[in-house]
Image 1 (cartoon, helix red, strand yellow):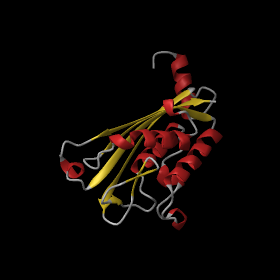
Image 2 (cartoon, rainbow, N blue to C red):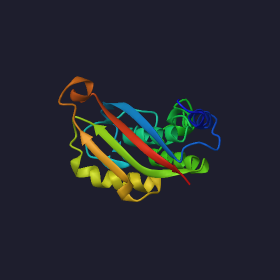
Image 3 (tube, rainbow, N blue to C red):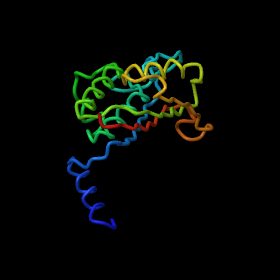
Image 4 (cartoon, rainbow, N blue to C red):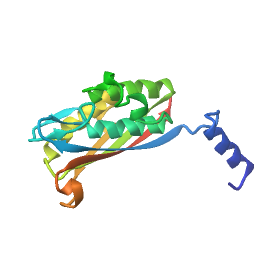
Length: 179
């Protein structure tokens, strides 16, 4: 910090004072193992596949990463803090409902989504045919237009646990603006 004004801005942001920036960025990450006998749900969309993701809730890695990103951008912690897997209330929970509740809390703090950019890393199944439905579902859950959401799918080029189809991973970045 080179000036007194820089110091004031930094201390204001740390204390949630009047100098908190109007724009806030957050990042989210999630990974779940692929197992037989469970549906594969990503971005709130059920995708035909011979396995699904293992988790306390519906294990929607994409929505979990997005939930972490928006909560983090608003300095509200992470999904585990708000919807712990130790709470039986959230057993089998629909992650669309969890994201909507997270967004209610984010808006309660005075922020709304500018945009969300996400990447799902999965060797299989091929996700390209489902990107449009996932993007629409995410936009609906966030309460924003589809033009504010980007969902991408990548493989791991057959490397590691993702390449061996043992798990699916998602990453998300969210930009919030003070409202």
